[in-house]
Image 1 (cartoon, rainbow, N blue to C red):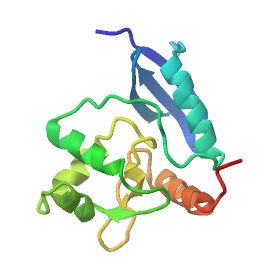
Image 2 (image 1 turned 45 degrees about the horizontal axis):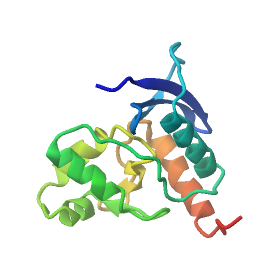
Image 3 (image 1 turned 120 degrees about the vertical axis):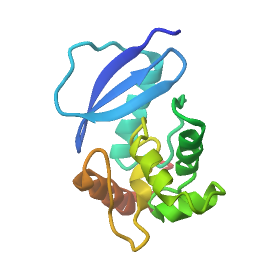
Image 4 (image 1 turned 45 degrees about the vertical axis):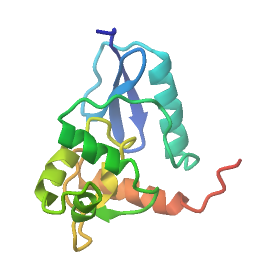
Length: 160
């Protein structure tokens, strides 16, 4: 198994904990306290540069390589989340239909909740069928912030 690298990233909506191996990003999660062990890696550096650009409204699609660790169903859901366009929201039912399992709405919600790579895999773009904000591991205030941020920056000329 490859050596793991860890670091924290201070975002406008809280501290993120990033984990990678030498080839790919493995995790991005919200944390409440800084963890001592930190070490850099090319993957973590790329992820932080892209998060900087995202939070500055200059990046709409992440290209940092990531590796999904979960069940086959979870991976299918997370891959579907990656197809949701920037500043767009879809329902859990939309994702269930997109993965060819229209009755799996609750299972999609559970997989969404277990997303290991927050923000980069945009689970914040999934909302309730009636348009309500539902569940987000970082908290609904962060989900609202991310959606508002994307709407505010969706028409930006990214060729700067």
